[in-house]
Length: 208
Image 1 (tube, one colour):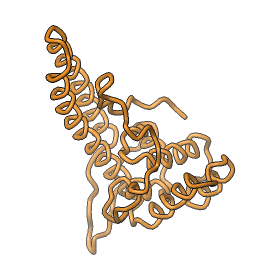
Image 2 (cartoon, rainbow, N blue to C red):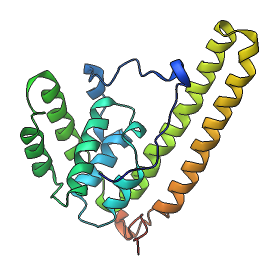
Image 3 (cartoon, one colour):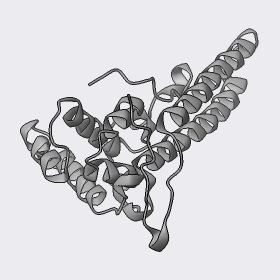
């Protein structure tokens, strides 16, 4: 898989540790996928036959997805696209089996996530819109993490380390802000909705 721009890094040292450590929890699959932008983004990737999906998978990072189960599913879809293989729902389901990921509790959760994403109703033509929305949500989570990190630092860090910690957070968020601007540029304009609600144009710029 091509190297993608770094995804959001939200914990600032020890504060960045993901408490889930990548584990798939039961709560990962409770929301209605039809209103979950991460599920909609994966759905549009699964059903899109446009070459612009390569732009999406090269631009997004698994860490842009909040739920570990969707991170893993995105990685699998991206690997299919990178290898030039079909990435429709049936092909991704077959890849789950072929890579040994379909077995056990984790496999059950991944297969359920794939099923939810498949039926979420994301329009393939809106893949860029959904991708940008996923990144925007990750960007906002970064500020929540920054605030929590500052609060914890104010309580626990030695006084002479507080300012450096603040500066480090500022640099991280500045990098995230530039990345967001770059992604907006790469993924282009919002979708254009025509008569009857039909999405008439792709949301992602074709690459030369």
